[in-house]
Amino acid sequence: MTGAAATQDGTPGEEREDALRPDGPGAPARAVLPEKEPGAFRTISEVAEDLDLPQHVLRFWETRFTQVRPLKRGGNRRYYRPDDVDLLRGIRRLLYGQGYTIRGAQRVLRERGMRFVQAVGRGEQTAPAFVETDPEPEPEAAPPPLARADRASLTAALDELRACRRMLAGLRPARTAGSDAPEPT
Picture 1: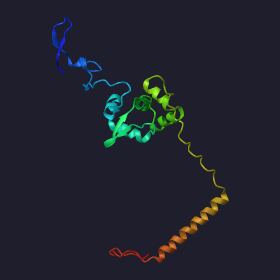
Picture 2: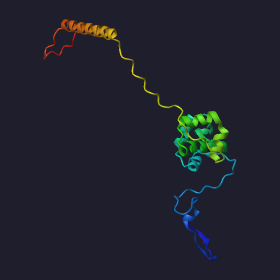
Picture 3: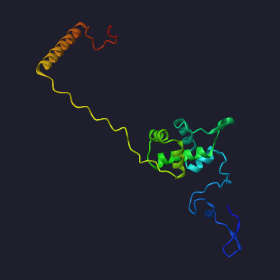
Picture 4: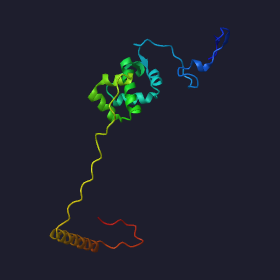
């Protein structure tokens, strides 16, 4: 974007493109959209740009967080209310800023409520530190050693099973090296 602008001394001059960027000089160029009213609905592309997320992530979050319900119009176009944007911002802060998992963020929504997560998104609240509540299960203790009598009976049963296997192997006809015929069942 170039255009005539007044320099510090009031004379016409070229306006620097960096100065127009919302994040200041050196920031990546963004399309400067006309400012909407605070209560206006936002499209998915506007919300995705505002939250610095791809659109498919917002669609995915709709499947995981039932509280996110944009208004859908013809052609399945999504329009987000200001409360939806605050909720998405809060979910983003929980997931990306505080290290919550999706399940953990769902738990915060369930236990603390949608208004709390919206407040987190606006920066008015801070979610509790993420704590894993499902610790790794402890490995089971080794079974107690077998008594001598139990060990002897198990060894005898194993010997019987091995004898049965030998008998069955003797009943099966021997396969020849060149035989492609399948074994009879």
